[in-house]
Image (cartoon, rainbow, N blue to C red):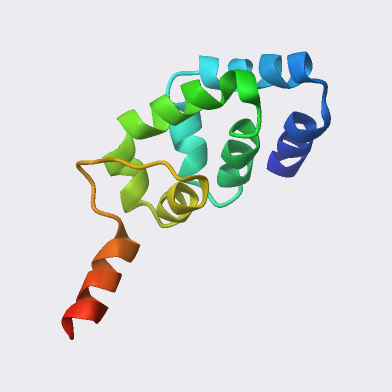
Length: 103
């Protein structure tokens, strides 16, 4: 089902995709829950491709940054779409710092 929703977001007209993305985000916590699921992350990536709704999705994800960054799928998705949270260290940045430091 996530693949169907993601495909619909990517292939519908701009207004239709914006409506669908806004309906998804109208459910409290939905975008964050999707980001923390293997298949749901695909939907979040598609929402981020909808110009009218991408900024709102990014704000929801940044607000829940700590939770999303702790999640296996959420952390990878954050890196892919370039969402950053100042208060949450990236697992990849920690690894890179350790590698450079000789740990």
